[in-house]
Length: 148
Image (cartoon, rainbow, N blue to C red; front, side, top):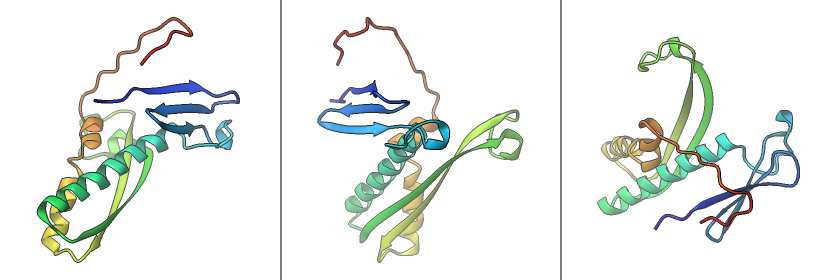
């Protein structure tokens, strides 16, 4: 059963306190954006979700195949690019968000296994969510009302 994520504004600046079940996290903006840098910014949290999902998906796949994958490292960056510079994109005006992911696979894997794992990397649930059409429904609740 999915857990509800609850985000409360912090006492200082842009800091946010995040709770997911028993887990507590913080988010903030870097100092050069007016924050205190007490946690990752929202884009870094998004990249973290994608990287974690990619690593988990590759591990699960390799275990099912009984492949000797010892570890996965995913390095991610987010940037804005001009639409006209993106050959594979439908949008041709303005800017687009681009995520670059570099994956390192550790273990005594064959070249065929490495190539298959790279194909599987783009099939993790978070990757699929990010590239799909998405609808976010936002509603206003009464301040102080207990939710989830």
